Image 1 (cartoon, rainbow, N blue to C red):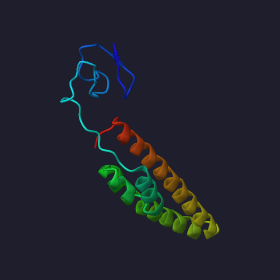
Image 2: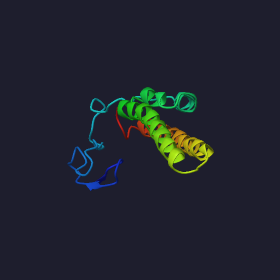
Image 3: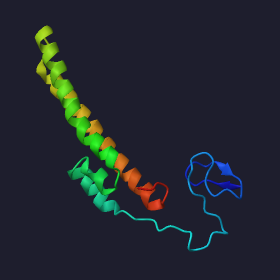
Length: 132
């Protein structure tokens, strides 16, 4: 039985790909010509981009859809908060400071999440678990 390095599923010895997730299984009978070269991404560059240019770091690790989604999601969240804050401030006597704190908290959570995700994806790319 060959254990898949990506998902941990136990496959038959003659399987070339994992039945569960489709990951290419490497057996001892594979020759050197069948092995693919794993592209390495610099962890320091990934972290610096994630800290100083949030969203752009996804493009460095070639996660195009995540980068585009992140860059489109941030303005949409802020616009929706502005609309909600305008509605509630005109309807109820709520201070606008609450809306500012809510926007800052949401931005901080998304900022920390994208740093964590970029670090995790860079590690997975460097280990050859995910391809790009």
